[in-house]
Length: 336
Image (cartoon, rainbow, N blue to C red; front, side, top):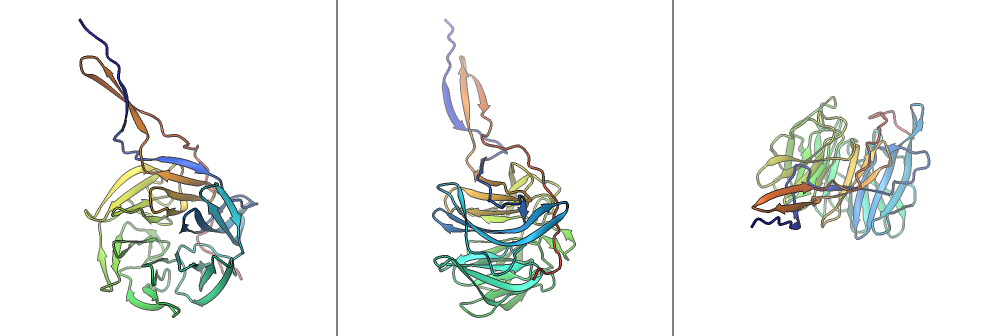
C-alpha cells in the first residue's frame, strides 16, 4: 500500500538573502527629503539623529540644525533642541557619559556635544578637518581627519584633538566602526576623488595600521556597522557598482560576504545597532527609516511520501517599493 504523507514544518532556509527589512516611521522634516546626516544609539529605546541637507525642490536645499530622538518602542520621532550650527556630512558621532559628540561637517573644523539630560548643546573644542569618520573606545574619541588633513586624531578627556598617526592613504566620506579593541575603517574617496575598496584596521594600543581584505566593490558615502559576534555590516549605496549590496565582514577570517539586498538604494546611509539583534538604517535623500532583522524568514517544508521533499521560502515581509533618490551636493561653501 502506498501512502501520501504531508508534514508541515518551519526551518531557517539557507539563502543569500539573509534577513528581513521593516519600514518604520519617517523622520518628520516638514519640507520632505533630507540627507547627509548622522545617527547614534543611546541604549534602550533611543536613537538620536541630525537632519543634514533638506531638499526644497528645484535643485535648492537648506542645511539644517534640527535634531531628533527616535523611540524604538513607540516608533515615533521627537524634535529636540536645535544644534548650534547647521550640520551635514557629520559622520563622526559617538555617545559617552551622557553626552553625544559629533563633528559639524560643512567644511568647518568644529566639534560639538549635546547633553542628553539637559537637551542642550555646547561647542567644547576645535575639531580636525571635516568629512572624516570617528568612533570611541568608551573612554577616548578617535577621528580620521578627512579631506585636507590625513591623520588619526585622539581626544582624551576634556583635551583638544591631538594627532597620533598618519593615515595610510587619503580618506574622505568614509566610515569607522570599533570591534575587538580595534577601529575598522573604509577609505571612502581616495584623494577625495574616486571611490575605493581599501579597508584597514587601526590598533590604538600600538598606534598602528593594518591593511585588510579589500571590500568586494568600490564605495563611499556608506555605513560600516559593528553588529557583534566579530561581524561588521557595510552597505554599498549609490556610489557603488552594486548599489543594493549589504556586505558582512568577518574579523576572524578577514573575509567579506554579500549577505543581502537593501530595500532601496541607500544613498548616504546612516545606521545604528541596538546591541542585541536589530540594526536601524536611514535612507538619505528620502526620510525613509528601516529596521533590519538578520534572521531569515522561515521556509515551509512539505514531505510528499517516499522521501520526496519540497522546500518553499516565504517572501520577506514589509519590504517597501523602491524609493527614488534625489541628488544632493557632496560639499558646498560654509553655511554661517
